Image (cartoon, rainbow, N blue to C red; front, side):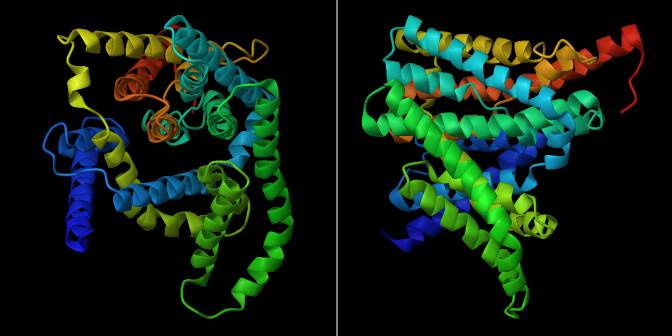
Length: 394
């Protein structure tokens, strides 16, 4: 393939991502939504400026690995520890209810068991980045509810990745059985927490050696190489590489070098992560959104049902801790956005040909809508609270 073609596509992807992200942020929405829309516009169903090819797809996969590494490094374990048991309960309920709802909805629609499991999986995770941003923008990031939601979102990421690992494992084996589910789940849990435990013990000794080296950028290169190594090992044992990337980020987030790595990974993420989101948009066939085409009406109906399950399942999770004196509606609404993690699930579905373009578009609509609606709904919940109870101190 001609390198000039790849360079031009890379140029278009980066410019489109930044313009789309800028426009989204100017209307009070996360940049990721603008990048998705930009991807749809430059894709084959509209302008045709960017097409899927092997090299760009590999760069997109590297982008999602970097994204999960960054999410892991940025995880706030102090907030998680403060939230403790309530966050764990909210997270578990917030995974179980949407998963069950998505599974039974797919079963009702006559989809295959694997498809039903996948749809349930896409509804499980909560976007840590979007959740943190919403609370911060509303000046409520220090609230007890915010700590619970952020802690639950971190646990959701872990549980969601385990669910994804199970789904990928089931796709690989081609069958659904309790043995396969138990096997892949156990493998994912052992990999995540085993690597976390072992690396936490070894990290101080390794960093001591790294600190003695004088070559420029050695600390960050070592950290990123560690991410690549765990991503590779995850793939070797039959898990998705992003599981290893997330584990590497979690490990480094507990070291004294967290801030250094977090700061240095940002420019790398700025280059590669937008490729993933743009290519997610490129994969959308805009024709599937036309409601006047009879075959598309089913996709839109599925999207609206998925959206309902996505909202209700996470909202009810906020009411799973009745012993806590908190605003349960704030917790429930704060858990709604799916964001980046949901997009990762969708990308695996379309990449492994588990779902067609119509169902893929339905999933994207659900993900985008949960992200769009969370800020205004959460703002309304705070206004109602202020009206009846007076403003809470952040």
